[in-house]
Amino acid sequence: QPQQVVNHDDNDDQNQFDSIAPHPYGVLPGGNVYMEGTKSNNNNSTVRQSCIHQLLTDDLWQQILQYCSGYDLGSIVQTCREFYVAGHQPELWRDLVLRDIQQPQYKSQLLQVKETWKDTYVYRHYYLSVHNSNNEEQATMKNIKSHQPIPVAGVYSDTYFRTHLCRSFRIPSLWLKSPSLTTHTKRKGQVPRVAHSTLSLDDFLNTYERPNYPVVIAGAAKSWPAYQKWSNMEYMKQSTPHQLFRATSGAAPYHANFTMESFYQYCCQSTDLEEAPLYLFDRAALQAGHPLEQDCIPALHESCPYFNPLEHTTNGGHDLFQLLGEGKRPDHTWLIMGSQRSGSSFHMDPNATHAWNAAIVGRKRWIFYPPGVTPPGVHPSPSGDEVAMPISIGEWLLNYGPQHDAEKLRRGALECTVEPGDMIFVPHGWWHLVINLDQVNIAVTHNYVSQSNLSTVLRFLQKKQDQISGCRDRQESIKPEHLYQAFTTELQKVHPQWLQEAQDKANAGWTCKAWTDDVQEENRSTKRKKPKKKKSITKKRK
Image (cartoon, rainbow, N blue to C red; front, side, top):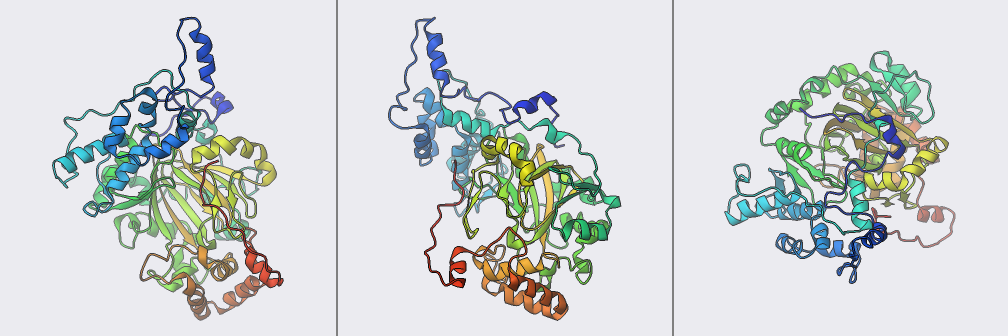
């Protein structure tokens, strides 16, 4: 069974983003070299300057090592202490594995995951390459010992030590405490948490969806069969025989296709701490009639009438994109699975949609910033089509967590912990970051359009076609340049009055502060022609 994190003492929140363990290879921050120099006077030893540091910085060495093969890395780590540390960064071996499975015969499939990425690489190279075997599931690691890090003395590096902090940040005990219910009164800094049994359809629409405000609906998914079954991984494996699930991360060069069993191994068995762990986010896992879909979607229709897509003529017109047809609409429902400290960096949901997210296994921490208020460390371009931000959640917490804590009440930020069986409503246009707190975390999420965000969606489809997502890589889907026309045509047939009202609002301007017209369009409207400045690449490190 997946394990939950044990609460720490409240005292650990005084340094809430320190590391849970020393660096596995004994690395210390660069400044410690001066302290070591003082100590060395007592034992007549000297602190030597690393020969590799005389040539290049650790950051540059790390970039160079990304071009090495597994054989080269295995040789380099034997040359000196500094290269032993540099060549054992787990991301280097992860990227080698992900590149290896891109070969046509492997079809991006990763069916066996070992304790470390280096072990996985050695296993694949030795058994699948040397023995010319493609049967990954039957191969074993009988004669190969698992890699065990050896702490070495005398390695001082801010680069490697800081990366370790980003990988292994301590989860604050406050995040792990069982949250209490609140009334509909909105408290500063907290996402309201309302019991499922007391939240009526009118309360949800009038207090949360139409005002565009998040809410945790406690216990909304506890009646679902998924809540009872999905913590049993044997059931999950039996329900998905031979099925592959796509997983990736913002720092990985390629995606990987896992079986349910192999991704569960990755979450539970891996001893590597990665800065940006792979995250299973699969749009095809919950297709109609699939056992996992039957475990949650029919029960959703009964337990949450405000999220029932079958009632699109009432309830504020829930899930209006379904009018386009199942294959033609943008992607909308995902199975999500991740390990501890995995999650989603700050983003807004696609195509100006609302969303709900149901936690089935494991807890999640959510951080929200309201429309028009950009989180610290997040830098969108004027048009919003590019965003520069820290590459990982750990890096954001380390660099900007203190600023967030100091400013969150003044800037209207909200936080909450969502427990298994809870559901959260994610309003359109809100920046949000999500962190998985337990060893294994499984959730279901769905994006939708209703009458409350229809005008924003229509303007988005018109003005932000280059940002429309979820329909570009499927042949049957309606492509971005045709989506507005197709959607309004179907709305005219079913909801002509709603369409007219939404178009009037959309033509008057943005009704949500999350979006503005880009610089070029504003210049055209005022007959001022100024060149638009180009922005740098999206995600980059501070």
